[in-house]
Image 1 (spheres, rainbow, N blue to C red):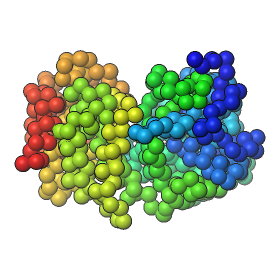
Image 2: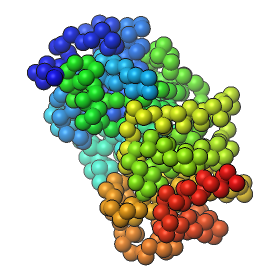
Image 3: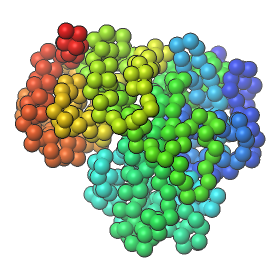
Image 4: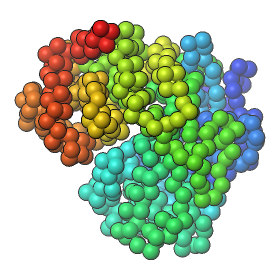
Length: 496
């Protein structure tokens, strides 16, 4: 039994736990991170911790939470900003107590002014982000600022009292400019293509609407490096917290579990300084785009394929899908026969990469829920599946698995799985999606209705008759035969 009166900052931890070896009192909040979520804890914060463990230094993190409740930050503070990451592999687990966080701010507790003051402080050299696609307030994955967004509309009226991330960063940069302080770098760590350019587009679009001269300064002086992030980090569950408590000997409500594999590719372009992340295995490169496209299509596209079709078929976890030989064969085909040909990356063994992905997906120690991956599909579909599909349409090649994955999303957002059980749909366009579902029969007219969503499908796909027919055929197969039988038939056809 664990003693709930104690925490990881006050107990003696087991010898096999990786703990901070550096002087935490020397840390300064040189990185302000917005979005203290599971992925950030198991990725950027952990890698910064590893650099500090190897080299010491003062590159600390200040964690900022804007919209979630304050329970996680309160627990973090009680633990002196320490938290546990449990790496779970087939051969065993490794607990790591991360100590790189030295400060935290919550909008509902300290207020937005405290956050703006920290961002405007000269010691802040990097502002990093894990705010998901919707946090950038863009109209679609490749769009410009969504001026219909309620937070953006508020910020345009009251730019000194911002609510949105683009508004907050713009106001902080305005203050630094007024004080003659060099600007920080804006480092997007979200899983989206050209995430640095997306962040730049959102902030510049906002700044141009309120202060064109400030926008010109931001465009000229502020670095927006792109990144590619890769690690499977399921949402924390009661079992996760139990496993962590067993590993470290005390409860840690901030803990997260993940796979052992980790990758971070960063465009080496910063306004001011940065940690020596190379010491932790981070790849600093001139161009991230080939890496991010490879990952978005081969890993994330495959994840989405498994999430929609697996959930419909009754598989709760990605590892459950991988235990089905037909799902495994179908997703391997998707990776190597349909996604890999669309890539331009060189010097990477794509077959080896795919085989590693299959092994990672099958990790029985992780319980990565298909429902979790399926969330926010309208934001993810374009870069994960539709970009590859468009490549095949241009080149006249076949892409049955990509089409089936898109049709799987269309069936999923219908709101019921193949057993007739209701699905808890989580999506920024949920109201619009529900309206289309409610107004269209469960046949080809639903496919046509969904294709009118230009924020997801653009204007080109609905005007391609052969594609519309292929999507309709796949959708109707899923409706009539179910996802399990449809994926099975696809996999069997690949062996013929």
